[in-house]
Amino acid sequence: MNPILSKVTISPDKTLRDALQLINSQALQVALVTDENERLLGIITDGDIRRGLLNNLSLDALVTQVMNTNPKTASPNTSKKKLLQLMQQYSVLSIPLVKDHILVGLETLKSAQQKAHYENPVLIMAGGFGTRLKPLTDKCPKPMLKVGNRPLLEIALFNFIQAGFSNFYISTHYMPEQIASYFGDGSRWNVNINYVHETTPLGTGGAVGLLPKDLSPLPTIVMNGDILTKVDFQHLLKFHEDNNADATMCVREYDYQIPYGVISGTGNRITEMVEKPVQRFFVNAGIYVINQDIIKSVPANTHIDMPTLLEQRITDGGQVLMFPIHEYWLDIGRMDDFKQAQIDICAIGFEQ
Image (cartoon, rainbow, N blue to C red; front, side, top):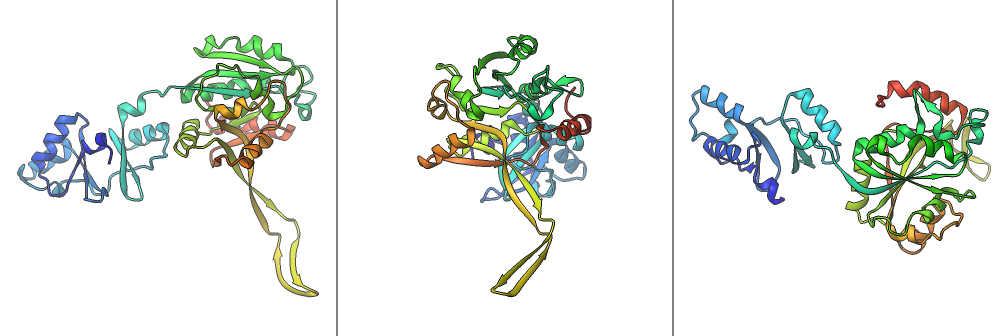
């Protein structure tokens, strides 16, 4: 158990007086009761102690007599936004974080309300022609098409800003002046925006070779600019760092139903018949976290796709991981996708 967490835990053989002293010393208004294996048994607030005293318990009574044995808990992977919603929903000031019944953390209302800040660079690739969305893209780059009342690229930028990121690069090629004119240097959103321009299309990975040589050594998030998503970028980055990955690719589960009955057999003998089976795959979601050495491996103005870049690192024995995403995600590549985005923008709850 980490030292900070140990300051708010108490064993079940302790008294209400012990719990009260702990609560007062830490100013968190809660004590967590754990056994010798760090399993969470219950929680105690000053209100629980007060109610116990009103029921004629003494300060020498055991904490087990007043503790809440069924507290609201959450996984350590729960986002701060979700934790804040849970605290507001259940009118509590803190939520223990539990994994396999073991106490691993405590999120308080104060810490959940504090906005995170990340120095990690974010590269949004916005240079595509958007050919499949013609005629909408005849005079407008695809990332500048409006979904709801804002350009798609602005929605992506805002989602990153909300997550605490402020250091942005936008790669451009098709009609770059429209993108640069709208976003400028980012001061409108109190962030920094720089541009890398592809004079010729460099593929989905070539733009990283145009990033400045003095780029922050922290892992860089790279995302296609035509994606509408609610992915938790904080969790993505934490997953990448916790697992010492060289690169992390976001993947999405994709179901494909074969429209016919599938027959298996040995020779002419049928051994199995499956009517319209569903096959499940993980597909590339167009969002990546890559370390600085991978970025430096891409020469400037070199055409390369991101999957090829990651395959090279796998061949070299690198740690390339996949991060399954279950949140909303839509790749706006076709006209049907664009129409769906107009429907989803309000229903999914994107900030306007």
